[in-house]
Image (cartoon, rainbow, N blue to C red; front, side, top):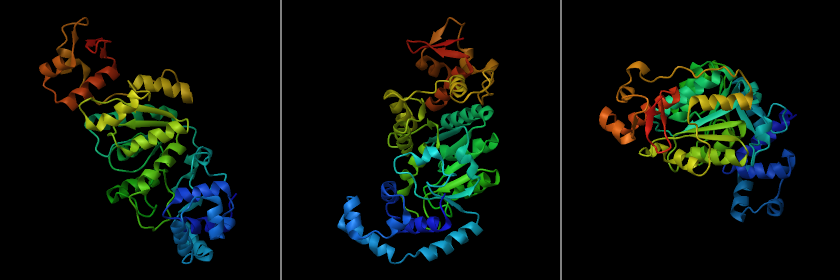
Length: 371
């Protein structure tokens, strides 16, 4: 269990190493004594790391403007603002995060830290520019998690992240937001109110960056390792070829998490990354029913849990179903497009919804058949 003094030392070290917190994590893993890390000299850095002379000089220079006593006062102010801290030696620090590569040396938390030890923690991440299909998939998949009392983990970014947090709140599921900015500066600012709603609904916001620090763009990809580390399961819902969500998928695979990708249209740039993940071996989520089976097998639960109601057009009047002559009739995607006049993204969404509902199925030759 870390003492207040230990937390103050770690906070001071975080400020000192603000340019590269993963480097501090590697030092901490070699010697988890913050007092020793705080008193390291130039020769110590040279002995235990490959840090350049320039980096060592910068660290030692930054240390001159930081004091442990100031850090104690700062942490006291944080506590008054209901910001708590956790270090790897604390029992409240999650085991799944403690064992990852480069775990955070200090976490700053607002909200219900008990969520860090919940039985079911599922990350839902994806593009910042989702299509209607991606938004629908995120909402419907999170709805399937409600019977399992899942905690939804995401990054409070624009797009799928924000959709995931809002869907969790809608389904009365707790949610954890992992920030790529200090806990005092939610980025983007437009998600500040969403962050407050997460706290109000017994959720949790965490960051490894000291409160009131200046936000840096390079921090955002680094928080993906925390998202992966906190979660047992990771869902990637729409991701472009260079999406940060692909980093989360890779890190999750490296940490032996269950990683899934939602397949998307071959015409959608927002699905290029997820489709590539599937091509390289990431299991796809082909239906809500399939995912419910996984949840039952992975976390236990009621095998009679049914697929939640979807947000698609009522089945009895669906224009795509109307163009099938009978159950033996098959149509290609091009033929369906010609006869229904859907745009490509909308068509893919409708077909996916119909497949999920079991109204149609895709045959081995790629054609579709009414069931």
